[in-house]
Image (cartoon, rainbow, N blue to C red):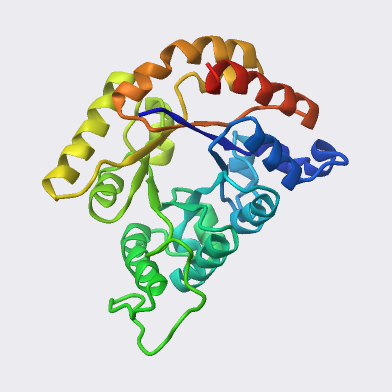
Length: 305
């Protein structure tokens, strides 16, 4: 299977967006990415992070549904991906409405990346339940899937009857759901209730912050993907899509896109052999001009290789 490429909008650009974008627009950026051959365009989610986290490497983010709607209007082919929507930050019925609206208005191009989340201070600021976030995510998925087919959801947290949310999504049954995270619970969700997985490359030090297992090499990644697909096969389900931010990301974060492409290009086949189906790339471009140069380079050296 050929690898697909997802472009994560540069998170560092959000903080200084008016200066970064200049006289252009987010729609024009998405169109440029689509024309460069990327298969996906994605947005992260952090509605109200704390200042200490921001000062230690955290980042701001657009509302993913608003931003991806702007991208949808300017494009025709590229997938629109939440990377990731934190389920507990909103009612699953509001989440289902946003997702169905974007999916229908984009012609069925939404992929809904979801996760339990890890930033406790943000949960507290939003009045969200951090301690029960995993349980709420499990039932949120069930409630959203029921909503997308016009059915009631019967559950202890979000059970509701005699309600209906129209219009339904363009994709029958709703957009595919990808689950983010390395935890045992995240991997269980991938097998039981999702269509894809977004494991996260991280050191042991970072794993202490996110409270999920470390992932530091392709061999480990391959073992994890194989285990997931084996469990799905045993359950009579198809293999999963796997989107992964490559281990070479540190070169890109340093601002050296040439070194990033040099390092990643010869390893793309190894990622594919490991079971990765999507490579997610987040440029560290400090301006729109740098971004366009970075994307052109990646298009030539990675996508059109």
